[in-house]
Length: 150
Length: 186
Image (cartoon, rainbow over the protein chains, first blue to last red):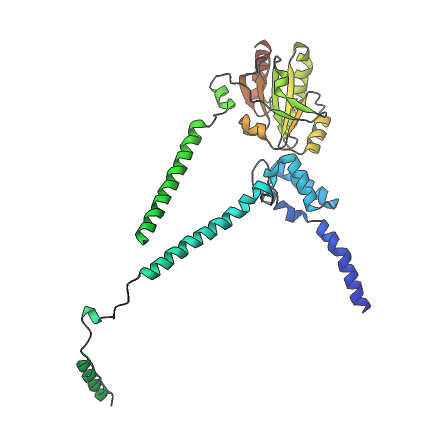
């Protein structure tokens, strides 16, 4: 019971702390190098190296991701963010792909529905383009084949 | 019905492609080729205007405020090694010719403000400094990197030439001195 209590307390203490202190490697994928226009983790440009060092300093000071993000946007503008913020006009960047996919899905669905409705009724298959056998002839053929099976 | 739908979709696709093509033509026809290119062709285009936060003191720095004075406009960043090497030369020109009205303006681009301030302090840069973290002026002036230096005449037009790389370098040094004299007399 004491052990369980200790674990709960440890989690309660560690939980908020780890949420408040992001890792540098996580952050490097969320910001763009202003000179080479790739994420920091893919860049070794001098400007990228400086921003990485800044991230390390801020993470060491346990600044939150939101705080670091605000600071970098204040210096470099919103273009420093690898993903557009979920606010105002920037929502378009998140919504348009979804709207596009839904629209494309709707168009394809309409085409498939119309195509399936407009298909002609299935015609009885014909062997080698010839008309089907006469029923009497077919019965006779069955009898003859049954004799071979015996 | 299906034929009409198909025809509608085809018309929509053609309209979309035509619209995109028209947009491309409009963009190519109306885009500004940039002051740097005009300067390279021997023209003297107006220097692109800017108003930026000052780095060396509170407030704003506007290029328009220096109209009537010859300006040496230098773009730099704290992470740029040649910027450090050329800083004493720019500081020297500022001290030598400021009595004649010349002003050296340093625009720090794509940089962290704290780094830039430290750099300016360490390199004893006493001329007016502006901060452009976003790098908007970089686009307006068509920079290909830092450092780059331009010369703005009293009438607000770019003169002489743009000097790419450090002005202290052998290939640029004489040209830099010539351009300083040209902008002083323009």
